[in-house]
Length: 234
Image (cartoon, rainbow, N blue to C red; front, side):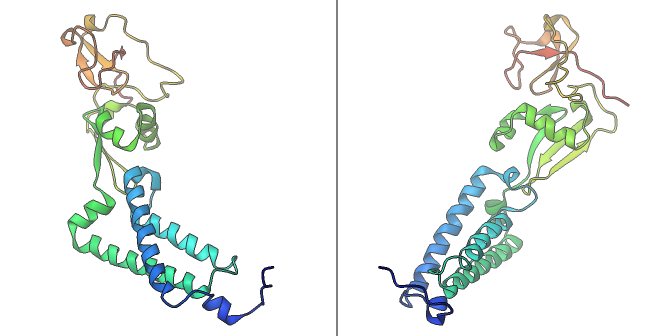
């Protein structure tokens, strides 16, 4: 039968039953878990961590776990939890300094900006890196006040999950995304080659109808559904 827990047993609270060398194992465990989680967060991309950087997001997770276990589990000695917290904060401080001082470290850990819209056209090859489909890109643009892709000269997805948008001084005709296409889809052109200009309903590219390839696929995203490009509202 397991021995009963003695309240306020200082030896159990701070040291537990582990030998002193166990603190070195805690350091190794923390390093392994920290950098493994950092690699996973780097892989899933910046949009998954909203307004926090990768390192800040990982710090929240690591500290939450370390701080959360010690108060509730009597078999978790406080010194072990404090050691984990200290190591995590020190690692985070070192990484912060590396990001500030060394550009390659910032690129490796936080990534760089990625252009997702160019000249009114969604760059699906780039948005695919964040597992974003056309509907999700349009939703992000609408939240920034974009009604028509023809308004956007360039848009960049920043490492912290923010979207930077640069608008044309004079908007161009493009794909209308307000109201959302799911609620009010534009009329599909049955004969796009006969139109002077056509707009791809997937990426928003505006092309000359007579110059479309024989299979009528968009030269940028390979989709074949076309509509009339709409002028942005003034």
